[in-house]
View 1 (tube, one colour):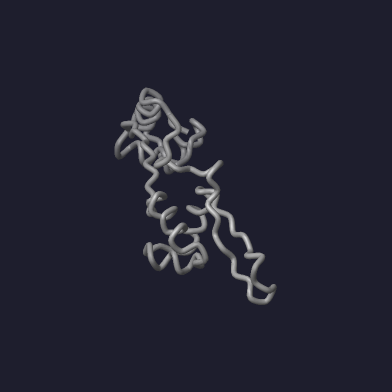
View 2 (view 1 turned 90 degrees about the vertical axis):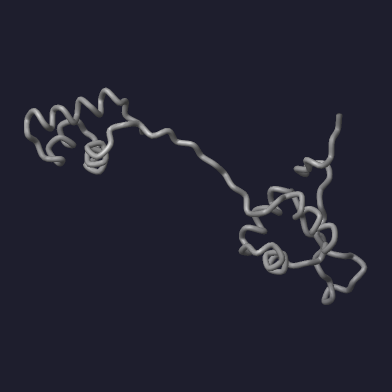
Length: 128
């Protein structure tokens, strides 16, 4: 929760005027001690900008799925230089499912990746 600048300044002025400790002023205004300490150093409100960075280019991952449809996630992770969980999350974002090949016997079946074209996030496909 972000407190307004005038509230922060009021808390700090009451602290200085009444010569209170951080604990006393935090209890008085029902805020956290860490907040009061932080405000005493810099009362200005910092703008919060969330930048979501992706380690994997989803277009390259989709191309990798087409080239190597039966590759394991750890193999893809080695190619992209990321951990296996990152590959799993990106494949989930791409709606990639694994289908068993009906041609092989049950003991020899390998799972093959199938890139869903209807629900897939595919910026290279334009439907204008």
